[in-house]
Length: 183
Image (cartoon, rainbow, N blue to C red; front, top):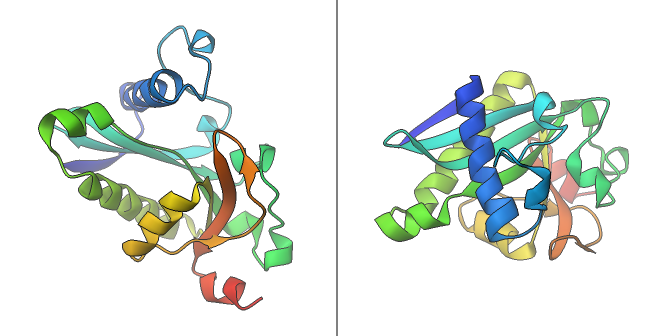
C-alpha cells in the first residue's frame, strides 16, 4: 500500500474516477449526467490537496483537504458552522471532504479498510502540519465520527445536524480541540 499526494493530471484523474464511482454510481449523491468523462470534480478541487492510497498501481482510497479560499468550504453550503464563535481561525482551517474508499476492491480482495482509513488520515495530518493548518472540519454522519473516535481521531460536533445525503453535521478537530471543547 502506498500513500501519495496526487499532483499530476493522471493521478488527479484517478482520484476523480474513484469519486465518480462512489458519489455518482454507488451513492447517487451527484447526478452522473453532470460528469460525462466519468470523473467527479468541482470548484473546490483547485483549492485542495488530494491524497491517494494505491495498491498495485490502483487508487483504492482518496480524500481531499480543501484549503481556505475565497469560495469557502464545501460544508458551508449545507451546514451552519460559526468558526469565530468556536474560537477557530478560519485561515488556519482546512476541510476534509470527498473521503472515498473503493468498496469493490475491499470486497474482492479482503483488503483491510482500516489500513486505508489510517493511511488517509496520516496523510491528512502530515499535509496539515506542512501547511500550518491547526483545525480540520468536516461534514459527516455520526456513525463515521464514532468510528474515527475508536482510532483516536477525535472530532467534536460543531453545529446542528442537517439532512444532506443523510443526516450530517459539521465537526471540527485539530490542535485547538481542547480549547473548542471547553467553550
